[in-house]
Image (cartoon, rainbow, N blue to C red; front, side, top):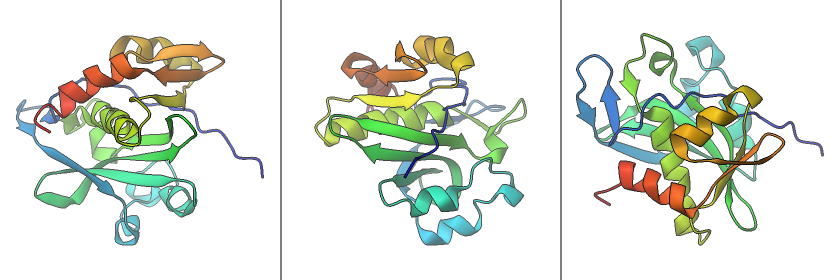
Length: 175
């Protein structure tokens, strides 16, 4: 079965300690939890989501995680789809909630938070923080500069142990 490659196409707007309100600069602690069936009702293209997360959620080799503000798990700030590979974690998809995209976004730091979580998961699973993903070609330089990813050929990017530790330290210092 041939799988369509999803290109990571998200701007890392700002590396924050958690997520930050764009207008007030208030910071909010976050939680990252596995997405469940009940969450799928609100994550639709009709509600402004770009990807079909129902399809992603039902793929047996993938885990979809949701980013929420601590003590407010009903509002999803962003999503990431991850697979455990032989020696690293692979990131299939990542998306900020519709209200966290564009010039008028509510919160900064959502994509960085999700990538840092994926790196943290890669440590927990014994992969020394290694995370790979397929980048949209126009964003390769952006990912090198913002999250320390390395371009390893084609559109493939890898975050190594050193870059993973920097991201984890930024987002998960207290844990």
